[in-house]
Image (cartoon, rainbow over all chains, first blue to last red; front, side):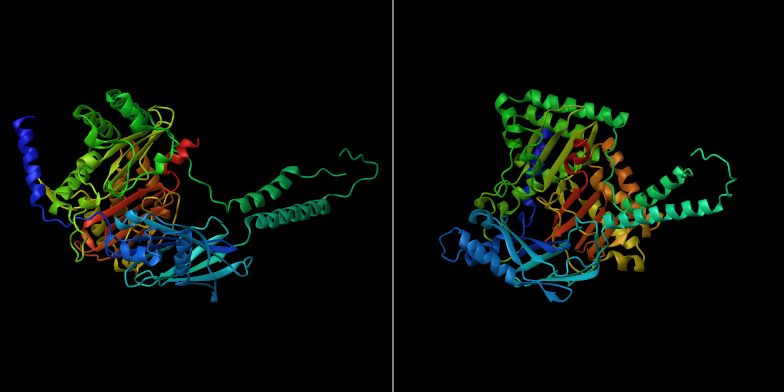
Length: 224
Length: 360
């Protein structure tokens, strides 16, 4: 190593040692609760990812691991997931929607203690009047552990291109989200209507053309 | 019987049908490779082969994966100890091998992009040596991060190659560690750098007498843009809620959120140029040819691109922003109220991991 390279490295190390920086790679005392809502014609799917910061992870874990054996059993996981879902309010066009737990995955205690383990809950709610075209509104509110909660809530772009998300309104902390959306007519049905209209138009043109043809002279031979 | 007017009938039937089906949106076409892009691909392939040539068989086994393996999506911004990466750890490589790995990065990235990666890695070295890795900034910290198995520093970055370096078949360079994930897919003579995650903690440090801000341009250009908007434009762009983290961070592949904010078509030419310049901070990490192709695509999609902002509008304050278009998502998110800890993400919902090129 050259003297210059050595000096550079020394300066670098000294700078590093002198730097009075707060050191942590991820969130500490918050419980991040990120929700993504997916609107379909017949249901709302909900993805909820919960990440407890390192300083609150043990308390969150203890509230799930109710027998305190250091592991989250399937029953404890299910009970916690259902508890979370009961603290969520979801409604469509003013009508309350019961949420069903679809899936839940829990990290190990060690991952949670590092503040990086993500609890993944998946829920779903059936929508009433699923076939109705027109404008609709969904309301979502997450009130789980508000004393430590940090919230994100977003609507995913619908996979069904008949559904178009419109205006969205949240509160400042993203506890709640109101989504306006529109269900449009089935493009295939629209195409069929266009096809029928096209055939009808062709018929009208044909009849109109026939009516404008000069009368045949008797004895002429129709070659068609 | 009279002859039917066949062309007229054909038009009458097909035009309405086409009108009906035009309601369906098509996915963007895969870009074709230009000559300069193909030349760059050859250069990147040569650098990858040079790197592979320095490795022992055991190292090759550890650092190479099938292109379609789960390693492709197995990246993170988290440090070692919080996330276990696969691939070759820089701390375990001899200098010649490290140099070859850096040579590969230099071939795949632009000069500025390579420097940004170095600045992020050097920042993590600063982090490693600051306060002995203690949790800081808040009461009730749980003690040194290192005592909890968390490792920081330049040694804790990993290189992996997926697939066989080739100018024709798809393959991928994956390089990352704490606060950094660079995923470059090389396919059909093109390079794609989505998804990637450049982040920084500290956001500002001094090295060899120079002040380094790894994501300083991303911060300053973002604030410049929001302040270049009129009050009416700001009203549309600024979200009335706080955003405390990335929405589409690691693990959120394939998800597309409903865009919010102001449509870029409502910005004037100068403001649009500022937005493109801002986006280039991410796009331009990739080599110049790959970045130029991506920028052209972003420019073509500007009328359908949104810019959203949350937080302070005075530079030095806390603010989150997002640029979202049909083939682009960029998020900039300070973490937990800390200006010295920034996460960002760069995605293409239609072409992450070169999906459009690979399926050709």
